[in-house]
Image 1 (tube, rainbow, N blue to C red):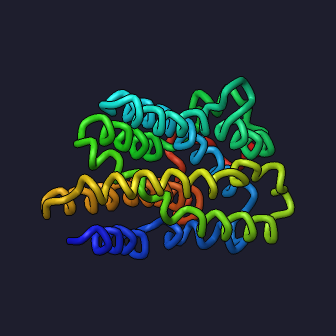
Image 2 (tube, rainbow, N blue to C red; image 1 turned 90 degrees about the vertical axis):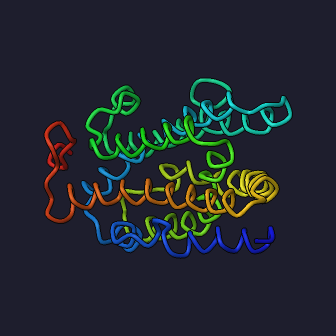
Image 3 (spheres, helix red, strand yellow; image 1 turned 180 degrees about the vertical axis):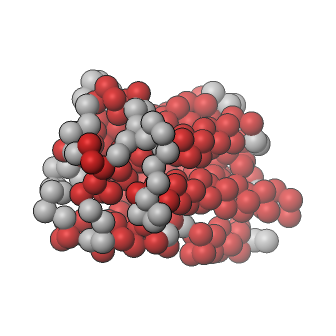
Length: 240
């Protein structure tokens, strides 16, 4: 494929598989969840948010040049911040704190669904073990995130009185950060995926990442919506 055709193929993965299509997200954005179900989403998503800089540090260690490492390390700064209380994960904890979750418990992953942990761990292992091209390609779900963020913020603010702009502060900076990150990752993938095998590997990596996100929502839906069976050790909405 030409680079243009490869980009189109990558974007087609999102149109088919991105988690904005999941029934749980439709309920979340359209006001179809209870406060407890939204809290369960915020808690479980927090584990993913906490592990993103771990994933990025894993990938950073594999980059062969200072130039590439300088570019990629900005992702870690975005999530971890430059100081205590700064960064994306700190802003996410404003949301979990609004439901009464203690920061220490959120950081420790207390009450998070086992399936959430398994999915996130699989993503970190993928980035550590697969080719650098596949690892970078897996990050390209960010191509699709600005649209879902806009829908999420507007929908949640309109439908849930317990959600405020302050508790959704995490999403304020993400569209611009994601756009910057996509510019680099997409250029890298299109430049380095030149054979048919490399191009198919990049597409498969992006499919895998979509599966990671989808699996987390499958677990939430099963545990907290239908049939509503949280496993032992998982947080329960009646705790609110």
